[in-house]
Length: 328
Ligand code: SF4
Figure 1: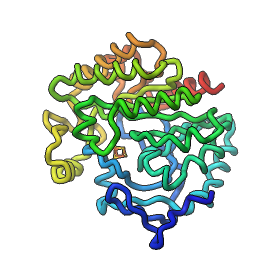
Figure 2: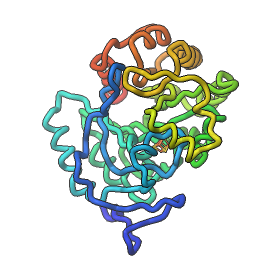
Figure 3: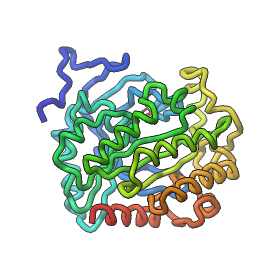
Figure 4: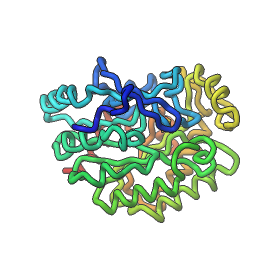
């Protein structure tokens, strides 16, 4: 892929005041999402394409992973991607749900790195995998220019307008994200949405309803493979970083308890209230949205969703079934 290496003299580029360094990556490119101890996870695979993100959301866990604030993209991705294809081809009976949006935004740097033009032709159309590109941006040109559609899920992270304006201030508005999603839908892509982190704040019910109304206005639910929900949670060491880097945020207001995985979370009744409220409104829009919870307990699943997969393997099966329904 010609354009992958950033071409400034020092091999560094600047975006949103970040320096982007292009370096070879020596670790494992494809890894199972570590999930979190004591909760039901989704059995996702992470494809490592870069480290850190220019969107700088106040709640982002990456602030504690990459303390120097530097952005890195991996210059040897093209060279090494064959390793991933070999793994996938060696287990044809298994469905791989692969995402690139865990350690960076999947599309924020795409205009520079052209990740989509490397990954989509290699990953699309393969029977046993889907590639999920998770973003808060409107950088969809690389997708639209591609001739592939099958096996690609383009996903947007959404939040309430209040949280979007204050805590995702370097990302496009919710409306702009949904307009990009609609364009992708019109161009034949399947979509996903992630409401994570759901945050309690004054008037959160009306605020989230505004986002759900926009979602219904712009998107045809029939193209939605899944919608996930997760409530705000954080490792204790992230709190002072958030306080220092985002002094105006309100996301740390309220009470939290330490969960089974050592992360601070809302009390269970609050999490159940958040998910139940969202589920009620999702289901009054469409009953077949592939709703699921990210890193939640059996009890919270039962009380908010009315059922529970019970364990990670069963949530994996549920999401694999969604993949088969959309892509055969
Ligand atoms: S878009 Fe995602 S990866 Fe980027 S800063 Fe926000 S939460 Fe972190």
